[in-house]
Length: 200
Length: 176
Image (cartoon, rainbow over all chains, first blue to last red; front, side):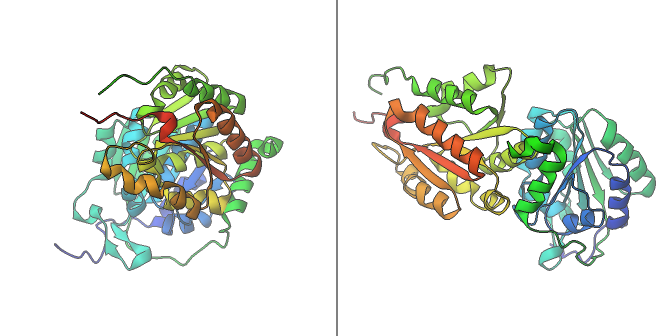
């Protein structure tokens, strides 16, 4: 077994997230913990719910939110390690088929927060293949800038559930976001989305 | 197996409590004790009943439901409570309301020794994970206890688990 030193991906994660979030309009966003949280934090928005823990939960938070807000697009942005911990959610979401849910994995094939150990995707596990087999309407692996533009158009518009495994390089960025109080992140999100109803 | 347990009304009482509470999303890992309730929730066009692969998915799903303005409930057997522990940090850190109904095994008249470990630990483990834990052992009190727990969960933004005792659920008579 090889210990991968770097990802097979070449895309820059912050550039990918910049492109993703520039076209969010009124989409509701859920991040996974770690790097994907910090990446999205660069473009902070009250319609983003950040995880700083609860590893493996991002996709299912996305499902609950997508069911509650069927007229809004829900985008989950998470990492490969976080997705692998909740990989059973592929089956639950595939069975449920929410057409307004899209999941993006920023796949660096590494557990970057804990010392750059390789995840299963470094050893050939194909997350898009798993999502496809679970019944996602769209499931693709993305490796190039050109494919990113097409993927972003698709994930905000297509009849979902949609899944994109975006292969990014192993570059680490500094922590971009100070906002980490969970109750505040939740209340800010709900108040922005629901108005006074948030306090019923 | 000896005679079947008598017909039960408490699953209907839980369903009625759900309707009074405005529960919309119902996430579950099946348990025999919740068979009728699961059928009723699936049959209700105003409810979204979602089968899970593991109980922790339901904790995350209910957090998402609440973010989107919907109330939810999570149904599980006691053997699933341990699967939820780290995911319950969501409820504690973010003050998500969460109504969890746990049908007990390893609790009263259990025949399967493998159910004892988690059954005996369920209440303690959920308390340590930050849940308010309540218990009901009388069939005629189930609906009232679930409604009260739901009101407290959604009014005070906390996770509340109601343990439905095996004495209510019924057990398999394993004698020869």
